[in-house]
Image 1 (spheres, one colour):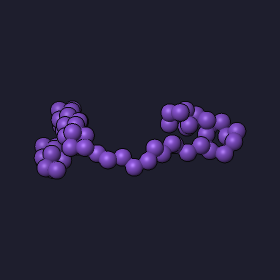
Image 2: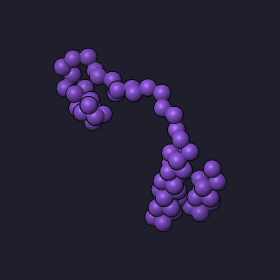
Image 3: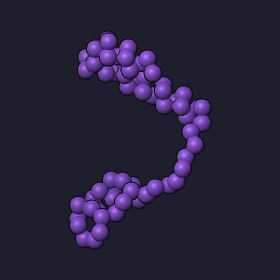
Length: 64
């Protein structure tokens, strides 16, 4: 069940609210971390291009 389905179900208030499913402990691999950094970098570039953040804010975000 997707989280959006759970939210819709909770809006109906027919029963007790459902909680999002917790899968368990997940180990991140080096590849997972590289992909996440790349994706966040792309988001930062889009924010800079659209003028929603300044160059200084961009540099601060990219420093991590």
